[in-house]
Image (cartoon, rainbow, N blue to C red; front, side):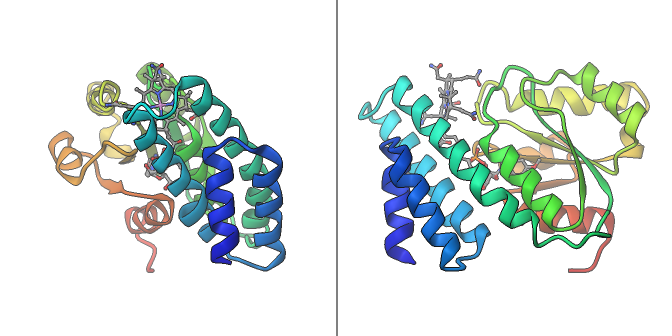
Length: 216
Ligand code: B1M
């Protein structure tokens, strides 16, 4: 398993589509847990790629290409992950969004997939989502939780903008707010008065369960 996880990571970093897909398929054929493939393989590769980008070892077009291969591998893993969900497993509704100004959605999509697998209903609003759209969707859909993802230090403050908008609109008491994304910290979560923070997708499931009062 470790060999194929390493092949997958290297292939994602190098945006080698065929190699990445073949490694993903081998891992699944060997019944490796899809969560392990996503978190210990794919997410780690993108983190390493980000570090290489910071050091000037790769450039934007290469990151775009890797993100595309990530999506293709994810499209293979996600149905297997979702197949573990029972047919009547329809739980609390979570509204998910990457905040305004931010186009990073790979991590949010993983959070959405794992929440769905764990029995939550997920309404994914996509990326670059403004507070007024979130407010309108809360009024329309009455979610139990809204999940706000942000990957840029310049867009993390928008999580607070959304919370302030909820307060202004008298909706703050109706919905729990969970925040996440690489630059988000527990300190920031506390500062803005969010209800929960998760560092990765499995942890997001744990926090969402706590927020709706479901025992682990
Ligand atoms: Co961008 N980017 N990017 N990027 N990008 C980062 C974030 C960066 C850290 C890279 C770097 O410099 N090392 C840097 C930000 C620096 C900063 O803010 N200080 C950066 C930059 C600068 C930029 C641009 C500004 C570059 C430019 O144009 N000059 C630009 C911004 C565009 C915009 O958003 N307006 C940009 C663009 C892009 C691409 C489009 C090329 C692509 C995104 C493709 C896509 O998402 N569809 C991209 C990528 C791929 C990255 C890196 C390399 C990888 C991000 C990723 O997908 N990781 C990233 C480097 C890094 O993060 N270290 C980087 C994999 C993913 C599974 O992890 O998203 O962290 P992550 O999600 C995790 C957890 O964070 C958590 O669970 C997930 C699963 O474990 N989580 C949540 C996420 N959301 C959650 C929500 C929750 C709970 C947990 O509750 C609601």
